[in-house]
Length: 277
Image (cartoon, rainbow, N blue to C red; front, side, top):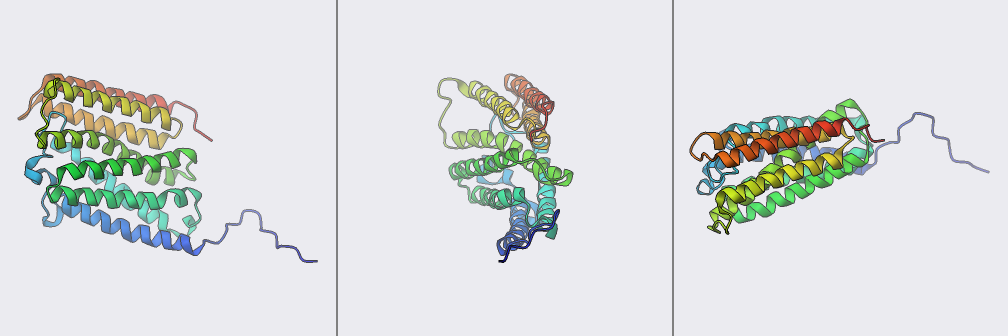
């Protein structure tokens, strides 16, 4: 009679060929997507997003457009995504259940980000709303999967959870700003509430979304802090842009200040919850 050989305690299963494929494709794909996005954003001689589509997405195009310094957060996000790409390709991480569940989705997110920049460069502002909505949906899938499984290490919590938290929080604010820009570019009009009224509604929606993220991701500290910090950052720079510059609007500015505080406080409160198993 034969029996299967016992697996020694503490041993790690050998990675499947699909694991190696995933690691290499995600690494190469992320580098290509990041390079394309950087070029499209104005690096290496490319045209910045603010100068494309007739300025429809500039910092003064709508009352909910963040001021220019807000976009510096992309440097941190891209650095985090690069760190993730390197982290996930290390041999010891090939069989990580969390990476198996999220790595492909992270790559799709980066490709969509590069696609969004390409669409904007082509001047297709309405289509940019569709792309950024898809980007936010993909990031939401990643967040859901991260919340379901606890980080396997502190390093993973930083490069995966923290990075995707920042990325998702920023895209959450950017999606609302993109919608406003597309409606303005299409000449939809003020639909009864006026520019100020609709801007306050969008800012309030961002605050509500930040609370929803905090409630959902509570117990996953790196994720929830990343989302809260990025949303608070983006909303704060909307406030700065409305307190000064070409498009001063104190009503929207104070609404953005309140929303920024709500985003930050919600995230901080969510971190006090006991970590999920």
